[in-house]
Amino acid sequence: MGHGRSLAAQCSGLLYAAAGTGQFFEDREHPKNNNWYLLTLGCRRGLTFLEQQPEVDPQRLGVHGYSMGGNLTMYVADSDDRAKAAVPSVGGQGWRWKAHEFIGGTARQEQIKGDAEVFRRTMSFESYAPLIRCPLLHRSATNDFHGWMDDVYRTNALIEDQPRRYSWAPHWNHQLTPEVAVTLPLWFDHYLKGGPSLPETPRSTLTLAPTPMLRVTPNSKSLPVARVEIFYSVDSDPRARFWRSPNVIREGDDFTSTFPLHTHELPLFSFANVVYSLPKPESLAAIPGYAKPVTEVCISSLLYSLSAPEIKQAHLPLTAKPTPLIDDFSHGLRDWYVLNAGNATHQQHWTRKVTDPLWRGTDGSTLQITLKMPQANHMSFVLQQNKWRSYCRRRRTFVCTKEIEGSEVGQTLTLALKDFTSPDGSPANWVEIDQLGLCAHFAAQGISANQAKLWKGAAPKFLRLAWNGRTS
Image (cartoon, rainbow, N blue to C red; front, side, top):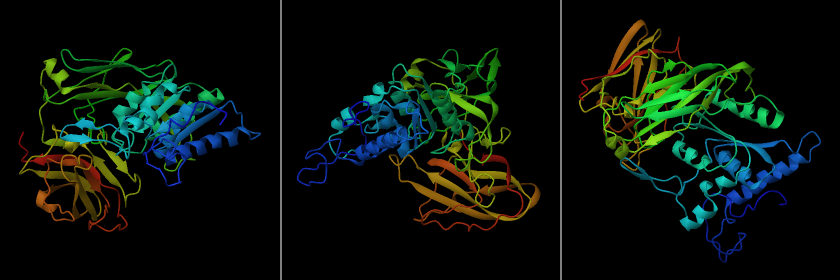
């Protein structure tokens, strides 16, 4: 190609034996015999096209991609020295071939068709991350199915002597919040156009005695700190993990949170988001879903993890106890993510809080939802069981659709397991729930749910969510 390093051993994808077919570059199992090789060549030719345009400075080219494009961003950043800055999003982490040990079983991202060792040595991201020679920002969602959070950090830690940043949208899967999305143009503005730099990765320290605590020190010299959000979890699976939001205390320039634990038998994970105020609103109007100017930017800390044996060995006090109260919404939707926000007819509120042992339902309990809704409407209440834990039991979705009377005051609905139905008629249970959805409209294959009728009046305001009859 005339630019950068060899690409033949730096693609990702599945390996295919090609002997005798005449359809591939090589007549044996080889990294060139997969679509990622051609896709990466296509991206590099895109750089060639750009550098030949009179309005383009060939010394200021960047590369960005989303999802599948996040993978390609890593390939191009590694194999082409013309990339002067890179921003992979929701993709591009290593160890996709490796079986990960989770509580209840194992899971891997890719089933390798061929020699897994060849894949690891020649095509897996962690094998060539040390070859990346440009500043890299990784944007993603904490519960992303495609870019597993823990492996993003493991992979990017192998990049040597290059600026790196992380920005995470908490609770989301494969989507970004505005303060995370805006890091993309700001990163390129700095490295390609000489604009202001993003704040450094905040300094952070996790200590265990006498109680686990994360201390975070933002870089407040570059931009004013709007807030610091600290999260921790005891779930080993990054896709299903619920991120608890403890109170954050400010101590001078530091922000701290302590992490009450209820058991020594589970691991511990923690990170922080530092949200800064931007000097002026930034427009993301060219990106679908971001119509409003963005006024804040998020820079995340490093990720900390401790295994269950390490937790047990530390002899930490157990001060947290399961509670029937799931959410009183005094912190708004801090523990939720919202799909189709602003579209009352299709709006959906989702939380993983009910998969956490502190807020999980038990046999015989019912779910009570208190809400305020001025006019009568249909709503669907959705349970997703083992959505990401199919290594434990079968995935299932259960739906309960109700017509709710309009009321200017709060009204409480009580839902029992028998109120929820699934396509195969199997019974639901609270213990295996991964996600709970409160939906104006929900539809899925094989599920008869409420039709997308035009919503009447204001969207519901949720006041309380709790278990009735829950046992610890």
